[in-house]
Length: 182
Length: 182
DNA sequence: AAGCTAAAGTTCGATGCTAAAGAATACATA
DNA sequence: TATGTATTCTTTAGCATCGAACTTTAGCTT
Image 1 (cartoon, each protein chain N blue to C red):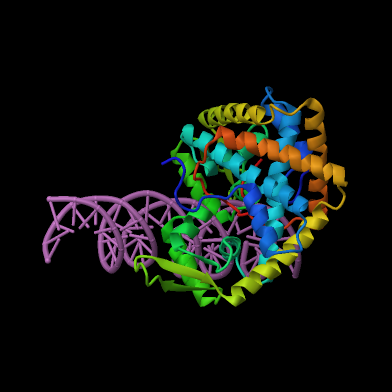
Image 2 (cartoon, rainbow over the protein chains, first blue to last red):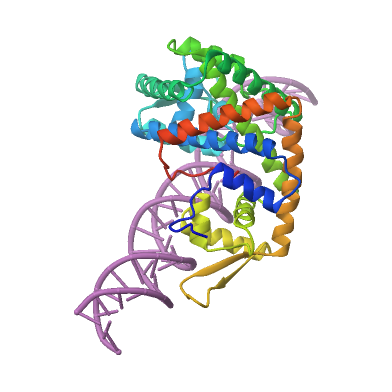
């Protein structure tokens, strides 16, 4: 095998060839789509991760910022709501919030009307970080889709929605870890 | 159980509406595609995880099995090759191999021709597990794409490849964690 | 040979996660 | 009022991971 230095990721074509070699009952077209989806998503997540790192926040921080902003003004959520939204345990949420409070991205205070509850609120600095990350992300996403014509975009969007419906129907909410928030 | 009373994942439409509310400079069509891609991938990963769990192995185990099988007969790799392939540190690989050896999925022995090296080899039981997982996965994947006509599949595959090329060109191999192997 | 350098794995300390137990508060009801 | 129960969050113990130091071996260089 002429492959010298490291065992990096094989190309998609090599990968599919290897699958066909080891597993005959395989539809190459299906595998091509599924593999491309998986790879595309991975690369995109790497790109997002690099962008958030540039802004001095972690991907974990970004997930929380997104959830808070998308919840709408006044940008408040309880730890367990956040945990459900992000697919984490409440325990993990406690620690994330600890960190983000020290980073100045959110505040934590007890709800005086129900002292069991805690209110996590986005700070202006946190909102600003989210905005910066969004600007970077939209630049990346626009660039990614640049070569697709409007018709191709519409078709792609529709096909993806159909697949999404199908997979959602097949598994009525699993509660698995939501690796990366939209 | 069933529908969570708490803060579960919003629908894609709600999500996009929230984005437009909080961030005006947003192309809804771009966001729709990107969000659908992300969601679709997440659901698929949940499905794969459930399948491997059914077989009594972890997702981590499955990644290693895949790498070994796809490397071709005699299904041997060194720990650091595996680590590079999976995007893990050698340290993590050591522990994974420990576990998989006790599970009987792989064997570990020193390479007598170069005693620094270690050879991790798939056992027949490990190969069988991989095969079972593949059978489940192909059923799922075939079902997922069932509603797409041949023409739609071809078009989808081609568009995804084009996006993949574009994102790969934009980031010449990052070495980030490869969350889930194809 | 003797000693340097590089490479391959393992070990060690720290981090972030999970599952499960624990503490504080609210609410219902006897 | 007192007590049981559910809810919300925190704490604890265990596991997988990373980064970095360390050990063993191979291959040079002198």
